[in-house]
Length: 441
Image (cartoon, rainbow, N blue to C red; front, side, top):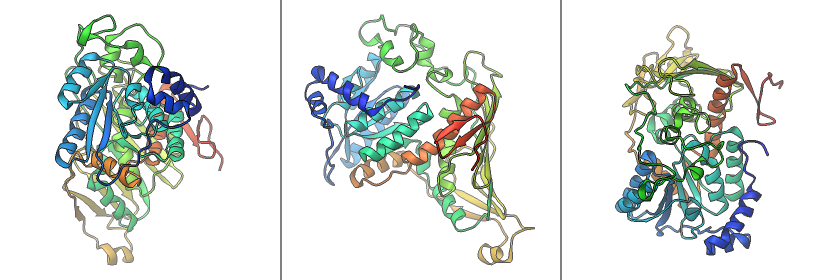
C-alpha cells in the first residue's frame, strides 16, 4: 500500500474490530451499516463533533456553537483532542462531552457531522472514516496531506454521497464570485495569468507557538498528551514538544507555506476562473533565509501552467509582510480582486482595468474603456460554516467542495514535491498522477 492511502475496506474492518469496545456503533459497522446516516430534516438541530481543538479547532467549536445559539441550527455535542487540557477546557466552554480518541466521536450514532481541525497529516484519515460512518465533514485547509488522499476523498464523497466542505473561509467571500461573473461575461478577454502573494513577518518566526513545558506523554491529568495517537499515520518518533506544538515547521505533518497559506490563494482563484483546473506543470523554489529552526522554507515561490493557456505565479515569505495585489490578467483587461494583496482580507470592490491600446470595438461597446469598480458585499466570518450546515440539509454542493479543493490540493502538493526534489513536475490528467516527464496529449 502506497504512503498516504487508506482503502475504505480497511476502515470497515478496523471499525468492526473496534466495535467490541465501542458498543452500538461497532455493532452497526459489523452489520455492514454506517453508525449514522440520519436524514437531517428542516427543523432538526444538527449534532456536531469537533476533532482537534487547538487554536483553530477551539475557534471553530465556538463559531458553530454561536450559530446554534443564534439560530438553533446546530449544536456541538462533543469535542476531541489528544491533549487532555484542550479537552477539559473546550468541553467546559462549549458545554459538551470530551474525548481523547476521535473514534469516540465518529462512532456516535447521534452525531451528524464532524469538524476536523487536527494537524494536516490526520485530515484525510479522519474524514474518510467519518464519511464511511455516515457523517458529513467540515475539514480545515489544507484538505489533506498527499495527492493520493485527495483522490480518495473525492471518490469517497461520490460513493457515500456525504457533504464535504473544506474550511478556507475566504472562498465564501463575495469578491471571488463577483470576479467569476466578470470573467464569465468577458470583461478581461482571454485569461493570461493570475498572481498572488501571502506574506507575514514576526520576531519569533511563523508557527513558533508557545510550548507548554509541563505537557507530554508522561504527564498526568490535564497535562497528558497522547503522543502516539497524535503521530498516527506519520513516522514514529520519540516525544518532541516542538513537533507537537509547532507542527507546521515539519514535512511529516505539513507542507509549510504552500499548504497552510497558499491554499487560501489557490482555492479562491479556482472559483474566479469559472471552472476548477488541474495544473499541467508546476515548479517551486525558495529556501530557509531567516529562520533556521525548521524543515520547511520560510520563503517560497511557485509557478504553475494550465492546459487552457494561462499561468499562475505565487510568492510568499515569512520574513517580510509586504503584499502585492492579487489579480488576474487578461488580453483585454486586468481584474484586481484584492488590491491590498491579502487574500483573506475584505475588499470593498474589485476593479476591471481595460488594456486601452488593444481592446476591441465590441469590448468598448459592452464595457467602455475606463476602469470599472464592482462593489463587494462584506461577508461575515461564519458564512462559510453556515453554508456547510445548509448543505447538510439540502444535500447540495458546498462552496468549497471536494472537487474544487482537489484541484487546489494537487497544485500546492506538487509545488511542495517540486521544491523538495528540485525539479519541474507534470500532471498526468489521464492517470491522475504526478509525472517527472512531460505528458503527451
